[in-house]
Amino acid sequence: MAKQAAFCHEQTVDVCLLQGTTGEWPSLSLDERIELATEWRRCVPVGHPMKLILHIGHDALPDARKLAQLAADLQYDAVLLSPPSKFVAASVEAQVACLAEVLSECPATPALYYHYPDVR
Image 1 (cartoon, one colour):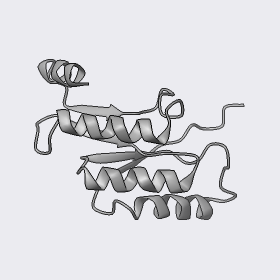
Image 2 (cartoon, helix red, strand yellow):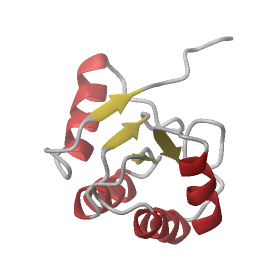
Image 3 (cartoon, one colour):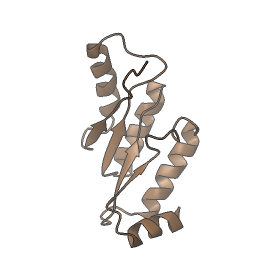
């Protein structure tokens, strides 16, 4: 990761989105996601010109909350959150409550929301 972070910085990348939207997050265990997030923050310390955004979405809400707390503890610049994809909330209100529960673990961290629209 140190080589990746250095390369991104050399290329004047402003922001790195970690464990993002192209399928890497569901293929990693929670421990792997924690390890990667911790190592990236070590390679790109707080105050570095390159900002870090951590994807904290997870199908298990307790795990999403752990990732949100980790993002707060490591002072990530922002988090990216997708809703659970296997157990979809029954209503918009339930979805908002789910997101609020997760984001309560990192209340001072800017949050971005995204979802995959139903494309059937």
